Image (cartoon, rainbow over all chains, first blue to last red):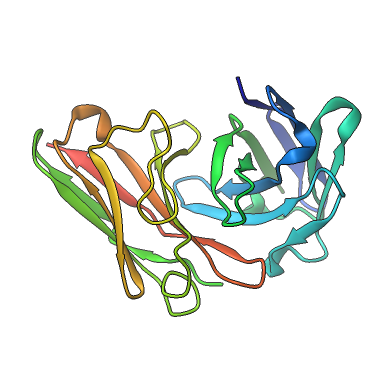
Length: 120
Length: 110
């Protein structure tokens, strides 16, 4: 069965970086884009961007340009999301999600989420 | 890209039907039939309930249905059950590789 398993919770200082992993299993990792979505405490979902695991190509939404890097390691079917220059408003649960591949950004499987807490 | 607009809350008694709206613009909801709906229980990851406006993934009860008119999409839950109490988010492709979620609706089963 399809599973996305994310790394554990992180506590970081303002200005630091965090790298969250998302290990895929149960399907061909290179066949489906991975998206990253975050959710601040008590708030809604915020889309961050995607990575194409086959080519390594990425797209980031404008507000994260310059601070966000998505990578992957196909040998271990794992995608990574690294956010730098952390601020207190980056405190959130970060999710990875698989795109069905139909081209319309349908996210059919999600990781369990990783809480990133940024303290000053 | 601004979030799609959803009413903050909706409620109904067991067995009743409720409809949640999701209003975007002619650049996102109105431009593409790429609207999805996600259900999120507290402390859990979102779950896909509807995609491409009105299609249900395998395993989602047919009590859940979707539709769209102009720049507004709708999610209807018929025969409301206690386990339907959750937050619901719409989403839409917004062109030029962009994607946007709705602000979320908290559904309460009375």
